[in-house]
Length: 249
Length: 346
Image (cartoon, rainbow over all chains, first blue to last red):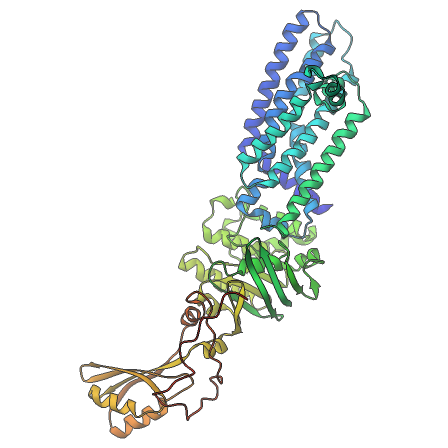
């Protein structure tokens, strides 16, 4: 556990000591900020409810931010260590491959969570604008952030996996973007597919619908289980990829 | 300390290491020598637990390298080839991080880090970022990292590659100091390094061990001739005539240098005609200003072993310690013929 904490600290530090984290956070907050501003100013003056604003923000705008941030955040984790050779010194220290993968994953998750923190300010602003209405629904809010962390966590594990496959950070980020982009687009199938069977099949797997539910405060255990097992699966796969160095060329 | 038996590593289409067996005793300093691509790094990576062997058994300190890798790694300091470091960290910070990773208890960590920084001469750069250090300092940080948890065994993959001569001397001195209380396996293709630091050398060529011996033994086995240098005050023809009379001579070149004659004589390996030469020159009453047998450098030995397409077979005849006085005459040196290149295929 102590070794794990050391690895985790190093992971978080390595991300925050690089300029990438700051550029990324700035862009992320810019997208979220503009999104929040447009939704809040237009929809609230339309007389839309606070729920609609939350759904627009966390079920809509958040996607752009997530799809943009995660490939860049995860691309360096293994690819860069492979390229510079530090993976060899890391994995010849008395640590297991699983410890390294978990430390890297939770390091990414920590940074991802920290990036989202400033968006909590939006709630204070909403509260201030809405003092006439009922107080903000904490259920809906925690649902929204739970969804952000669950889906984001799953996507981060995909990014980590892609990074473990290559020495090239650009390849890692593009692959991650392609995969999570496809998953996101797959989420529209229940709405756009002309085939009813496909609509029904894709509905339980649609992250877009899940996020809209979460942002309403509906926490269904099925998507929770889906994302948690998805994440575990990707992490186990990443450990296997790392282990494959032993027998591959 | 290290026992390697029939170690084999295949990559698709390549035999990186094939059927390599050797052992390293506690306290020994052993050099891995070989041209690029000979399998040095692959073998070291297997020892360090980074990759697994395709076949064979590797034991370090009585533990199996695939089953007890974690335990072994706690007792082993490994410097990978090209010395990878985190360029964004500072020297002290990096060594602390590595120390924690290698399980040094918190109360000893500070002292250990200070100790290795002093040992490796890193005190002046402790607060510098690794990315801004010169190659020589980075190499020392790499060695300090390998040392930080006070391992019994050090595996250093090309510790002096890419350094300037001054830096090489520094690293070499450091390795000599470390050799006093560590078992060290280092790889290099710089031969003088092996001569300067190692007790024993293992020569790899195309994934196979060509030679494993102490330095003297190696020289004895691989130097097929012994060269004697004579400088005497006499006409060149006279010196040539005299040398021809010495038993075991294979080649003789004499040049004049004013009143002096300088002879380069080649004798069959194991011959030491210095005494005979001295006596005969004294009988003639010539002045003698130089008479010595040239020591073959390991460099020549190495070129002999690894030149051409494949390794060369060593000459299988008695060792140098007991020179047979009645060796075959000049005309027929059959054993010392150029050895046949060994086939690369197993």
